Length: 200
Image 1: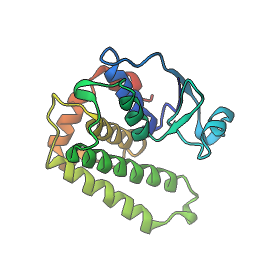
Image 2 (image 1 turned 120 degrees about the horizontal axis):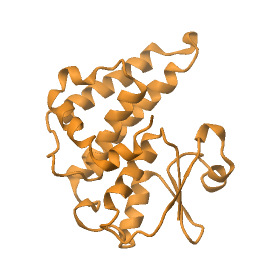
Image 3 (image 1 turned 30 degrees about the vertical axis):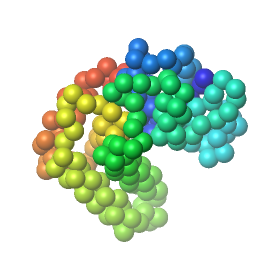
Image 4 (image 1 turned 135 degrees about the vertical axis):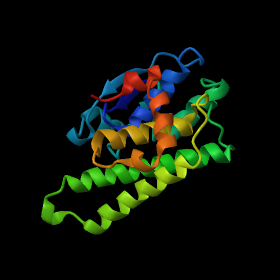
């Protein structure tokens, strides 16, 4: 199998962290990772995924899976992921954490792209909404910090989202009012899977 990803993509990083976490605990065979920038319209990526987005997983038989949750669910259905890290599609808590963290990532990415527009073209309205979405999501997670011993797909999505904000939006000081969440991230960020996939 081949995983098309971008080093700086939080969506692709979520899959890379997950796969690194389950290495040695699963029956996943070798997955070739291919770094490509979606904004460069990489031919292999466009040929596999009409959306031109990462992550994109090309299976051994040529079929293609896109979107991180779909990739994890497929691998699990094939019996490749087992144990504590297996995604539980009936676990409402994990589903909610994954959805909220993914939504926070969406807001952060939208804000990054909006700020890259020329100043006259930027929308103060949308920037405010995305900043508010990040603030409210952080506050929600700070009120219910994940246990340190657990690191399932919902927790991975949260850690990756927060580090993406640090990476692309350093002016957003989300730690100021989220001490518990900041302490949690400081702990999980030392995991080998997080360190190995962190963009420069």
